[in-house]
Length: 465
Ligand code: PMP
Image (spheres, rainbow, N blue to C red):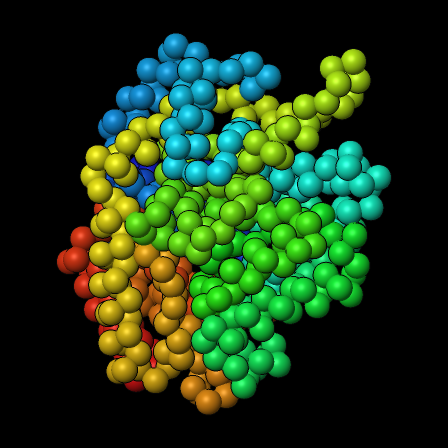
């Protein structure tokens, strides 16, 4: 007890310490210290229980609050909608649900149908179920396997974890669902791990995609129904695709009649700049696109699985067969606050030119991080797109051995002490987060970007000299 908190806040902190189980948190330290409670947010900034102000360079911790905190426009729309109609199961439609679906599809040429649900994991599970059902409807159940990639993440539910490429997250939760098969990652910085150390640029990209084909041929193309990939891997270490990679992946899917599921839970709704979705940078034509975090910037829980009309058509069967449709429901997919918030969120991005700001500020962030790389040998690689970037820290640029976890924690803590919240994600070694993550809201200014990188500069000097 430090005695500096007023009584109301002290009661909140004590209630949290006594009863809340925080996500992704080892709780032992809270037996002696206090958890961080975020009390308020405005624009790019948040304040904790001690009144300390932070610039939030990770949009609510996990790439979510794309339009920043305290948007009255969204709050008003949600309030109005809740007073008109808070909820009805999505077996019926709703006004914001219908209008948002139309506006979303306008931004996604080639896509057609919007299936509402309420978390990224669930949205991915919907796509998995659709792929499985198509396997049963069209191929007698044989073409049911789903490929996922090393280092990609698709959620915390058990089937999503079965498609989880980050072993450190999966430890102690098996056994997992059958029928999910892993393909290699495509991180050029660590191409030696893939046996492709001799290649670079486009040649590397095509060879990395061909590693997926090798798995398909090994498993048998007739057994593979879907391929689920993040356009740019987020929590697995900010992995941008190499040149030529996506073109070849698309070709492979076409050749072996494999449905392509793009997980845009992080990349979607502007995070990558210029385009609404990550896949749109790479000319990808997906069959499924799932999204969550930035759809309503965290003002309401909403997630979506979007499909093509072709996929949707496969589920329009003979009405006399009552069981032959997508037999799925998500209770909170019917919360109308979600699409009401999403509509205003999209309007803000358009009215304020945030896709353009994301590109411009992303370029500034990348430039600043590259300059830091010149100065700090501990930065082995800098990568990303738009306002979705990472800096991989290594002990030695030749061996590329990740820095120790305690040093990463010290960098994050030094930034925190200086009023900056950044993220750390794991590249590959269990327990060793060695990629600093930066994903500020799309409203970020040049001064904010410079504050972020100046603070990281000082933190790196403090920890590594
Ligand atoms: N896919 C990706 C790429 C993610 O990063 C996440 C969450 N970090 C998810 C899916 C799961 O989303 P949720 O936590 O909303 O279930």
